[in-house]
Length: 236
Image 1: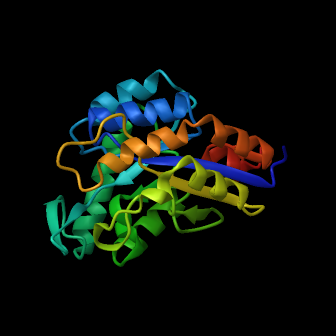
Image 2: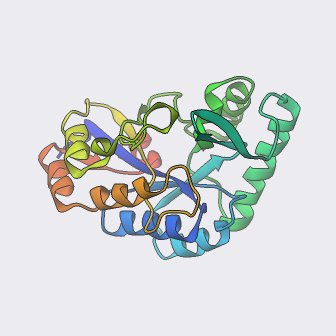
C-alpha cells in the first residue's frame, strides 16, 4: 500500500436522525467510512456528537444546511429553509452561526466544510464558503486538491431509483478505478430509513455495501489508503 491513492469516505447528514447516526457510526466502526459531515441544526445533532465521541478516529466536518428540496410527483419542493440561499448577507451570518454551533457541540473546529444538497455549487454560497474555508484553512468540497466522487448514490435525476449504484459490487468498481490522487467518496448510510425522507431505504442499502467484507478486500488489493482529510492533505 502506498500514499498514491488516498481515499476519504465521507458520510453526509450526520445528525439527520438517530437511525442515520447509528448507520454512520457503524459504517465507520465496521466499514470504510473515515469522516462525516454534521448537520448542526438537525434534530439528532446532539445525539450524533455523543455517538461519535466513542469513535475519536471519525473526523467531523460541517454540513452547512441552508434548506432541503424534495422531489414529489416530478416537482421539486422546499421541505424546509433556514435561510434564503440568494441572500448573501443572510447566508454569511448563517454560516457563522452554524460554525459556532459546531464548536459548541463538539468542542473543536470542523475538519472540513461541505453543504447539504451541494448548495455551495451556486453563488452566492459558493463564494462565501470558499472565502471562509480559505480563512479557516479547511478543505471545501468541490474545491482544491481533493477529487469528489458522488456516484455512490441510489437515485438519479428527479429521484429515479438507481439501486445498482449502491451495491458492494458498484462500490468495489469505484475503489478499483481510483486515480493516483486524493479522492472524497460521498455516502449516506443509515441503520434505519428516516421517516418520510426522499432518500430513505437507499441509506440502509448503502450501509450494507460500506460494511461488506469484499469492499474492504478491494481497498487493500487496490493499494488504497483510507484516511481523513487532514491525513490525506498532509501526505502522512
